[in-house]
Amino acid sequence: MLIAPSILSADFGRLAQEVKDICDAGCDYVHVDVMDGHFVPNMTIGPVVVEAVAKAASKPLDIHLMVDKNDFFVELFAPLEPKFISFHIESELHPNRLASKIRSLGIGSAVVLNPHTPVSEIEYLLEYLDMVLLMSVNPGFGGQKFIPNVLEKAKRLKELTQKRNPDCLIEIDGGVSDANIESIADAGVDIAVAGSYIFGHPLGYSKAIESLRRP
Image (tube, rainbow, N blue to C red; front, side, top):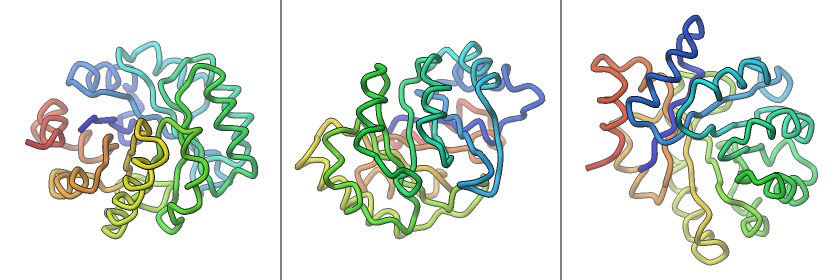
């Protein structure tokens, strides 16, 4: 299991140090949630702050767009050369074109599904994707409870990726902890995003990340 701590739950008063600490603790990616206050009822950070995060990080960025104008934000963040840029299928009229554009910029293209969105929505898009992110909470705020039926979506998605694009990774985001990581792994998920679990862990970031690796 690859681990991508979500900095949405970090202490923004010492963000650079928090990013360095999770990288030193052994994370695989730094998950960056970008919200515009329109697609979701929250606002987070823009390119100036994300650029600072990129400078502090020794691990690749995994940028998750929760926005209305995806193309605009892709242009903003592409110069930072993240590993992935993901956009919500619910907010994009031309997902094939945008996924191809992200790839053309040398970045992994990824699409996100909200909890209510079936995987059939992206079946014919999979060959253009490097990752699919399944939301296991409703997007917008950290600290929410995991929605268990997303595990069935993950299993169905795994079946589809094996047929259409075996190299496409599956990521899950929302309510991830050591209590559900075994079920998440069993469902075929490759990358776990965790925010409050990691940043609030009483034994520190290294122990939190290791507990999600799955024995």
